[in-house]
Image (tube, rainbow, N blue to C red; front, side):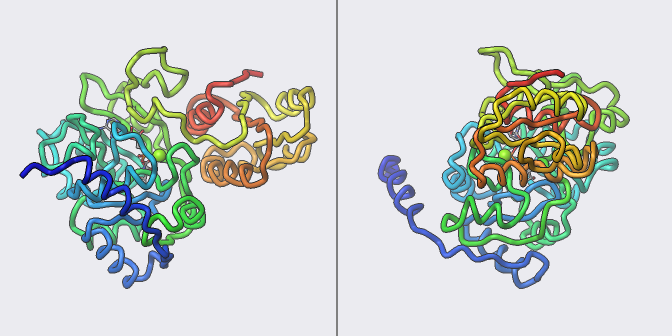
Length: 358
Ligand code: TXA
Ligand code: MG
């Protein structure tokens, strides 16, 4: 008998309304890992720490569990998920052919904040990869996430553990704020070191393509791959109507509730610009110690012009400004390239491309 899809969908929707008493357990405790293995093996989801941002994990082999990820996050079905593995042993069985650049990339950057897009075979279900014939793979370096993948011994699909559209979570508290009552378990592995999502490179075409900048920079990638093309949507708004290279790029992302204007330039030019704008409800997002000089309340992107501490601070700062209910955010990024590309990219999207070059 054919399954009545409508009834099945309704059944799932009602089942999702069940609210969980979400437990938060310390990720470094082997008993917590064992609990997460139980949750994931039974087709459910849980939030897990990685070195970039927290992920909302499910077994990549369970279509039902992966469907739950999409429902919990409110994520569009055609936006594919990253699959997390631990060791190349878990990579090869998922691929259609082994790309020639894989070993060198893995040697240089894995485990770590790099996601590699490659042609997949039929093992990873279509729901994971949004119907594409490719799969995004990452071997994270966070020790507790590694312990979890090893204990599961199956690949783990995990998008960032935020509600779709809000800034990615970098602490267990951020996960609680977004997902409390919606999932059974959050593993607390402390604040994420990197703070922005992994760099994504595709090696499926004739030349490697950077789809999302992150802690691993373009020049680091080029030192291994030779020339890497940068996808259009990374540095500016993709052309109206053109297909996004990465499905996630077509959605508003990293966005705080208040409108954000991104200003590119020096601390002095930033302070001078901000002083010409209406101050009512406005908040600055900039570096220590310039915040005190721009005449507005501010959230800090960390030590003066340090791209890595700015990445680490970004999403927590955006979330804090939401909590403060600010009306307008003026954010500063010193430059748009090199080590600043990842911060620029996230802020540009949070700004919905409202960018002023000072
Ligand atoms: O650091 C990270 O990558 C975190 C942690 C949890 O690992 N994960 C993360 O996942 O940021 P998510 O789902 O928030 O972002 C994944 C991005 C999306 O923009 C998606 O469209 C893209 O990766 N993506 C996934 N599979 C893809 C594929 N086969 N082809 C092109 N883009 C893909
Ligand atoms: Mg995300």
